[in-house]
Structures are given as C-alpha cells and as structure tokens.
Image 1 (cartoon, rainbow, N blue to C red):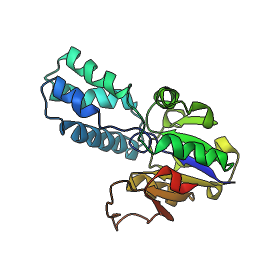
Image 2: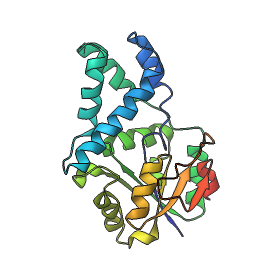
Image 3: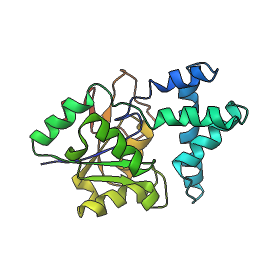
Length: 209
C-alpha cells in the first residue's frame, strides 16, 4: 500500500476553462497561464521570506491590475477558478489507485475548501481521506514544513509518502523534505535539470496504479 499526496491546482484541476473567463472580461485567453504563474511566484516569494499569504488574496491581488481594478471583472474571473473540472485522467486514475488499496490525500497551496469542491464535483471526494492546505502550516510549498505537515497528518515518516505533482518545483521541494516523488507529465515536457529529479514519471494518474 502506498500513500499518495496529490497537489491540487493543475495536477488535479484543469485550468483550461480559465482562458474563457479571461476572454469574457476582454483579455486574451493566454492571460490565464500568466496570471496563475504570477500567483505562484508571488505566493512562493512570500513563503521564502518567512510569511504566509492566502492563495485567494494573492490571486485577487495579481488579477486586479490586469483588469484596471474593476471589481466585477475580478470576481467574474475568480468565480471560474472555483468551478474548474478535473483533468480527464483523474477520475479513473483515482478510482484505480483506491481499488488497489492505496491511501490518497491532497496538499495544496490553496484552501482545502477549493479541493473539496473540485473533488466533490468530480464524484471522487470520498476516495481521499484528507484534504490538507498550507494555510494550516503557515508556509506555502515548496517550504519543507508544508510537506512534513502532510507526513505528520498521516502519522508516517516522510519517506512513506509520495508527492504527485505536475510542477517540478513541487517535486523538488518534496524530495528535499524526504518524500518520494512522482512527476505527472501530461504534456511531454522536459524536466528542468536544476530541480531534484522525480523518482517516477507518469503521463496519467492511472499509471501510478
């Protein structure tokens, strides 16, 4: 039996529909990826300085200047983030992992309620025993404490957990904290050589099973 710790944003959730939200407020659909990357950058920067910023606050703060401070447009875009689907491979993959007897949980830089909504809409909330957020820790991933918090929540040593993520920086952080790692590479990307390499690379969640 393995214990898989899933990142949530982009690993489980499909950000594709966010492009439509940006188009609806007059911005190019590609702005969605720039916005999300900037949110990650700013949240991780705060964590590196020893602070904690709520994901929703960073997301709103990055978005407001792009929309000239229009509160209605900002909320329209953010509402789309709370209604995202999972990637097509997630439901079947998660069920295959549970059928094989593995334990599943999530660890997100966002709120646990967002993960709960995502998994509930997909019909797989019951397959996850814990939905963890860095808000309970005080530091965003990839800080060491975030990953150790997941191990403590499971009452297991870090090496008994496998972090599953699409983000190489998340894989690197987990590896440095002593967790096992599985890089979910759906796009055929090249893993950056400056990060600790993953112990496994898969293209779908089902491959983990």
